[in-house]
Image (spheres, helix red, strand yellow):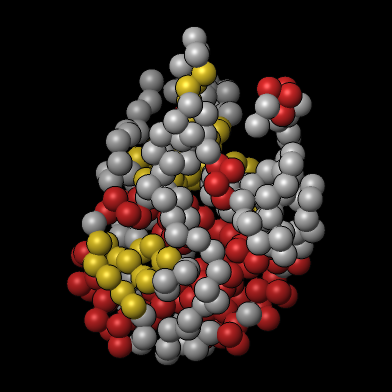
Length: 324
């Protein structure tokens, strides 16, 4: 990498990846970021849960039912299969994002899941690293809301710090592929596949909430889980974080569940064929979110926005929810 490479790069305004999930508009980061897999995962759940469990919803099944988790995990496997197959810099590769995020396409995937048995995804993807990502959400009295993510990738990025400025350079070029047939194959001037994730939800064309969750390949699957907690189960923004999560690794096909959740449904999921493990909370990422609630009576308390904010921050990581 040369000085000219850095001087020739400029930031870009991108069109977000979007879907509508049970009446809520969900916006996420587009390729080459991974977050559009959140949208596909939600599409699959919306289209396929009625097929996999006729007459049921995720809410009616509930988190104590192993099928609730089985469906979430299987939807993740399908979405990440497409993520690893297609995600790349759209300036260099054709990423069929409109097709992948369409409802008919999600419906076409339902038959690939056995409602009673775990599947084995194709051995594509990569092992995740320890990482050094932070996320935050913020909002102001004028109604501006921001979901933000920043990452060095590895625990100290490239290990190079710009003299005199203290800026540490990341090493996200590590996520290129050396397979010349891959859409993510390394090339000059090309942006690599990256795991950065942030999202935003609107209801009736009005802002509802930010959502961010750090943690490598946990990010897109984790955002989908907390959105299901809010949009399907009715959790508030803090409870959505406090609720137990899983992390599925595509390449070894290992399902990691926080220990209380493992004790609740782990044995039954293992009987369905999942290679399920009990883990501590640090592996399932760290979340922050802010939700806006319209309220004419709150206009005097929150000038200009006609409502109030609620915030949530993950107990598994450093961070807090604060307002002033």
